[in-house]
Image 1: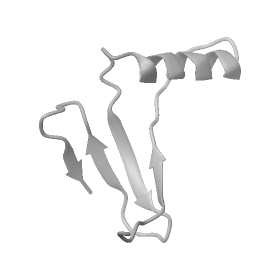
Image 2 (image 1 turned 180 degrees about the horizontal axis):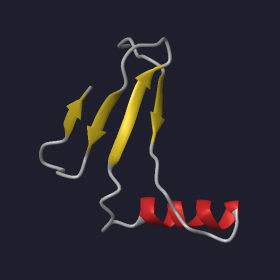
Image 3 (image 1 turned 60 degrees about the vertical axis):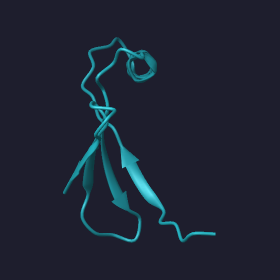
Image 4 (image 1 turned 90 degrees about the vertical axis):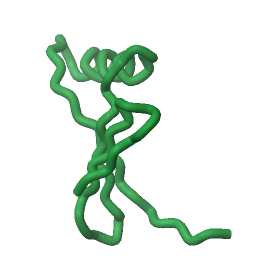
Length: 66
């Protein structure tokens, strides 16, 4: 079995909503929309280190930067 690293993956978005539940529901709908371009994530190893930014907007060539 290959070694793995526990990571924290984050996705952030600013949303106007009437309450926290409505904001979370809107964010979830955006994430689940196949047409969404909300494909940019921050990934940090739980052991520390730099956060890498991964963008899946281009499915053929996802990019990763620090």
